[in-house]
Image 1 (tube, helix red, strand yellow):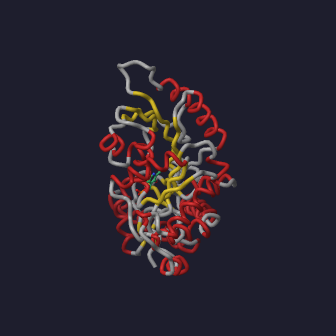
Image 2 (cartoon, rainbow, N blue to C red; image 1 turned 90 degrees about the vertical axis):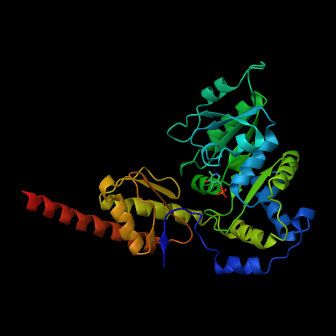
Length: 347
Ligand SMILES: *Cc1c(COP(=O)(O)O)cnc(C)c1O
């Protein structure tokens, strides 16, 4: 069985999820006729305490539609340098929406300095783009941003007449870590985008939730960019199953990430403090490539780097973590022996 720490996007649908998908009632969703998609959208909206939901094929498209639903051409979004919507989505907001990003450095905890956010809001002056939106992300780089900060950011947006979007691709990881329902964590955002295809384990799909008027604008954009699918209830059933059954179990992924970091530490590999399902580990540069190759030969997949991201998920259990740690430990000690042999031979 492959042990794959490359991402939490690599999960396969479980047997129960596949059954739900196979049995899904479907219809043409462009006509609003797919009962499973409608159910997913309503269920997601109610989980977030929002008026409406909209199903998207990907998180990238959901974020794009949200940005474009909030901002017109020549308007601006304030966003983190490390934010997925800014850094990892091909510049879609700028390319397709003519939305100017105003990136700000993320603080070490992943948040934006709200004084910097406020200072970046442009005055009403024809020299400037019109600042329209703040976009945050939670979790970001596996780090949880707490409710108090988010409430302050929402209050700032309200005070300055801006909209506020949350890229909550992994917001359920944040909510589980904080021990609060997503509804309480996200109340006050105009829109939240939540991936079903990451830790939640659905094969595809993201849901955007928010106020009804924004969601209706996003629906038009989804159609424009080719994301309005037909009998996609087959897919949405996986997402619905994930929301119903796979939220609380994210705690297991978090525990496994802790276990992984602890195991690596015992093998001499240090990691950043682990908050959710991501471990950022520091491997000696010279062993990265051979170690990655060695692990691949054992059917263990990861991108080993000086700063290695290892992500836990539904398809890796504690035994898998232990097997991986043992393999890394064995490789390191073998390597140390051959290194010291080489040193001895040279002496
Ligand atoms: C994965 C991810 C997305 C995009 O999701 P895709 O479905 O891969 O397009 C957006 N934001 C964040 C924070 C993500 O991790």
